[in-house]
Length: 111
Length: 113
Image (cartoon, rainbow over all chains, first blue to last red; front, side):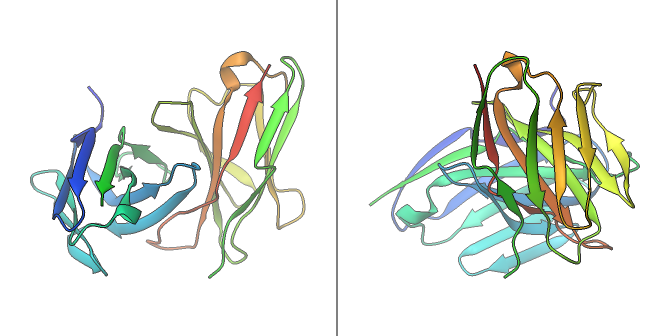
């Protein structure tokens, strides 16, 4: 079983729709990251959170530590949001601060 | 905004050859990482580096791999004798002290022929 599971694997939306991507993890964590990977391959950090909720523009990330679950929401989605969204966790159990990644969610927003 | 920069963006190498991937982390950052992503797969941790030594490495990071911070600004990943299965995107990341996020470079696409 993967330590980090994301759903859905693929998501297609119409411009303007509200989007939710989910992440579940099985280990104790000290932090969770949401990352964005564009077709060229580069990775951009969107959020790092260890509790509660964070908001940046149209993006909102929430985490429930007890349930080991996080969600990334995109409001008023736009075609430029099309990318792979990746959840990654920093485990409490490792001595370093390595990240363990989910498989990613491919989001396509159509105009 | 400061960035992590990686060079080259694409490296093509014959199997068995040595390759060095280069990274310039954000200047005041103290922790450095290499990750790789085989095409179509998830990103995997290779190694972390702090205070001029490896702090953690994965089972992927075998004797063929090494890392170095030769001059206080560059952070390099060397693969001594490349194999076909080393073909992947390699990402460098760095972070500051404390509970700070990792910042990623744009990656180097390594193609082994």
